[in-house]
Length: 342
Ligand code: C5P
Figure 1 (cartoon, rainbow, N blue to C red):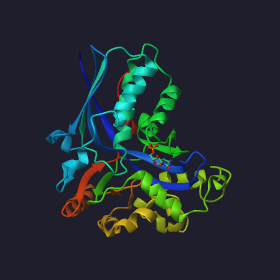
Figure 2: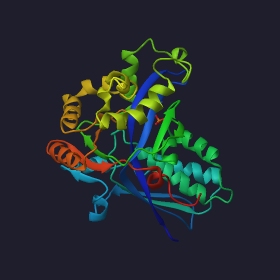
Figure 3: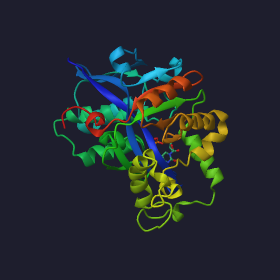
Figure 4: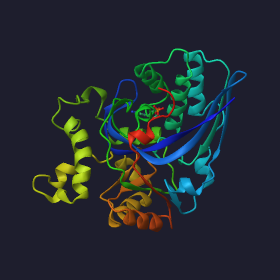
C-alpha cells in the first residue's frame, strides 16, 4: 500500500455579499474565492480492508514549508485540532466517495493541520475537496467534473472552489463556482484574533440585522443594476485590486467609492462588534501598507494584501506580537488545484 501526499490549500474571500435568505435556509452569496499558500498535508491511500481510518494532528513545521507560510506569534495548538471521527468533513468525503464510486479497500488518511479552524479559511472544506478528488481518481469509472461538483456541494457550500483552485467567482450558496483569471501572487498577511467565529451563528446575526431581506427579494446576477451585478463582483474585484495597488483609485476614472463597492465583506458588519480586535487588526494592516484588508468569510481571520514583500513581512511581525499572523501569498490555480490523475 503506497500513500500519496497531497496539499490542501486555504482560501480567503475577496469580498462577500450576502444577497438574502433563501427558501432552503441557506444564504444567497456573491463572492470571489482566492486560494492562498497556507496548506494542510493529507497522506491518503487505499489499503487492504474496508472502511475509513482517519488520523488528525497539528503539522510540525519544516524550514522548506515555512517559506510558503511563516507563522508569527504563538499559535495555539487547539486551533489545529480537529476530530478524527465521522464528524470530520474529511471522513464524510471519504464515506461519500466509497459509496458513490463503489471503492474497495480501506481509505487511510493522515491529516496534518496548519490551517486554523473557525477562521473563514475553508480548512475543512478544502480537506474534503482534496480527499473527494483523489478518491474519484481511483474510481473504475472516473466522474465528470460536473459529477464531482455535485458530490462536493453535498458536503458543504465551500467545497466547490477547492475543486478549481486559484481565483473563482462563487454564486448561489457559494457552491456555484466559476474559474477567473489568476491574480498576481501578492504577499498576503493573515491575522487570527483569539476569538473564533462559527459560520452558522454569523449568518443568524446577519438575519437579525436584515429581517426584510428575504429570498424573494434576491436580485438576479445580471438583471439588477445594484448589489449583485457581475460588474460589482468580477470587474471590481479583479480589476480594482491592481488599480488600487497602483494608487489609481484616486483617478477620476476610477473613483474610490466605485472601485471599493462590491468587494467589502458583509460579515464585517456582524463580526466586528464581537471584539475590538477585528477593527484594530484591519486598521493595523492598512496602516502597515496593505492595499486591501478584510475579514475572510465569516472570520475570525483577517487578511491584508500587499504590493511590497518587505511591508508584508513587517506587518506580520508586528501583528504576531499580540495576535497570530501568517506571512503567505496568493496561490495561483496551477499550484492550488487538486493534484492527482484527472
Ligand atoms: O454548507 P455548510 O455546511 O458549509 O454551511 C454551514 C452553515 O452555514 C449552514 O448550516 C448554514 O447555516 C450556513 N450557510 C448559509 N448560507 C450559505 C452557506 C452556509 O446560511 N450560503
